[in-house]
Image (cartoon, rainbow, N blue to C red):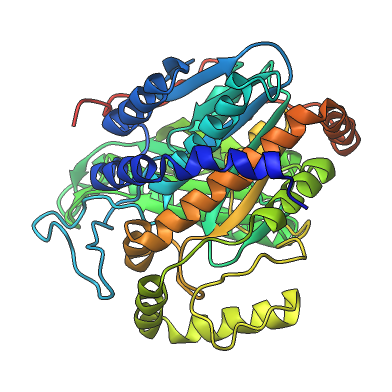
Length: 478
């Protein structure tokens, strides 16, 4: 049960509601893709500076990353925030598909709600800062701005560069259709491009003078597809061929982009090594050559039972987002665009979590059961690498309608609507209250570390090559 002094701390968020929503709207308008979040990161950094934080803009090799802190000594409680967007999602805040910039269809939009994710964690950091400043608790609060989550880049580089080396506990959140603790482990992943180089020639007149880079890519893909029979059932291999050529030209340049996913890092490493052999074989067969562009890799999320309990209890004490009548009306209208998924998600709510959502379009209750408890979800997140160096946990907060597809125009609209802002304010309070309780009872921090060591079956090794840097060539003032 929430205590009176804890409830009083919510005033830190309530008094800044307008400012936090304004900041979220600002980042929603910027909608900058990964590693290009120049204005978004600056806006967050300036806000935290105005709140009295010591702010570092640029962390390690990532110039749009942020480390902002207040207080001194241990425990050090960290909040993770994101603010990158997705391509081709420049949607208006409305219940039908409508581009904000129809003349620029490739322009990005916040189809995953990251404008709210970063600002929600900012709100939590400010709430805990106020408690430290008032002498209610002792310790340090940090906000880590983590760019390029959609590229699975930001946190992985930040971990490798030592950004979290003295953190005691880390917490974060993500928008979802449901409210609750998030127990999924997610998959490890490598993202890598294989660039083949051949010799151009006239495809009709002198094909014998050419060596086709496209042939090499196709042969590599064939070998990878035959390899699928012999990898573990839960391994996933996806690829996309990248080649600009005409049929009457033997192409001298062609590339293929691969994702390799698996529940454990060692499985990704084994399949990746095998895939490199496929590339070598394809190059030998076509008398071409190739080079490898390793983009990024990430690890699975390691659970933490102690932080899970702390955050779920704080969530249940705080309650679900406070939606308005306009929010419910907007979600009801929006649901007409995804009726099949709405029915499926309502069924999941009832059968798996015991929540009757038959007449609901927004989830306004907190689940008692952990969502996706210890399941290996098919996607990947760079939160995983943080969880391997410091006790880490994440919650889901309803910032979209039940059934709303992720990475969609509908999600972009919700992210700029009060539905998204309500989830952001709720997340700020849940994360802030969780941090407050950790500082009030440092034994919980020690317990979280004990559980961390129990769950870590092998030492963490960064999936990134030691000399790899993020691709910053395109990062510039927008």
